[in-house]
Each structure stands twice: as C-alpha cells, then as structure tokens.
Length: 113
Image 1 (cartoon, one colour):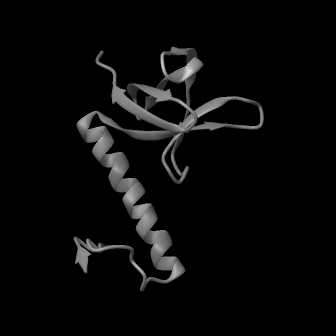
Image 2 (image 1 turned 180 degrees about the horizontal axis):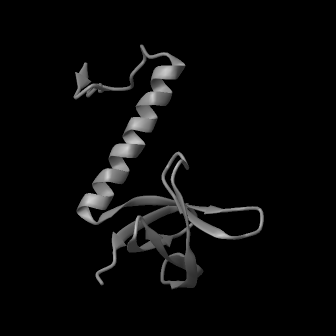
C-alpha cells in the first residue's frame, strides 16, 4: 500500500522492498520528519560527537547536521551529568533540546525570539 507515494504497511514490517526502495523510503521519512519539526516547532533529533569531540545535532540518518553548544547537568534519575542541554541554529531558527540518560535522542523545541 502507498500513502501519497510513500510505502506504508500498518500491519507490520515492509518485506517486499529492494535495498534501493528501503533507502529511498528512509530518506523520505527523514525529510518528512524534519519538515514537520520545522512546521510544528518541536521534534526528535540525535546527538553526534566527531573525532575532535565537537558536538552536533543531526537527523536520524545524519544527512542534516548542525553544530551545537552543550551543557551538562545533574538529573535525579540519570545521575551526575545525566542531562545534556543543546542549543543550535537550524535554517535560521534557534532550537533547544534535551537528552537524558544513556542514549543519543534529543527532544527539541524551537526557541521563541
């Protein structure tokens, strides 16, 4: 089944797709996720550290990446330095995101001017 040209299977995993179709599907989803985040002002992004220990925020496939300023702080469940706050500029908009615990997921919101 296709929804607006995008492969969609509500009952489980898509199994009848070639590697190229899967790659295109993932790129389409990544782009749609980014568009919704920009439009709605909140979304999910991911933390990346390069070989020089610089911090970045990226989309889930890493096709879009932005340098970020990071601050570590304590969290009552995640412990010392268990919370990371991120600030970055994406397409001229300022964003703030939070990561808590042992993962790379950043829950982000656009910052009001």
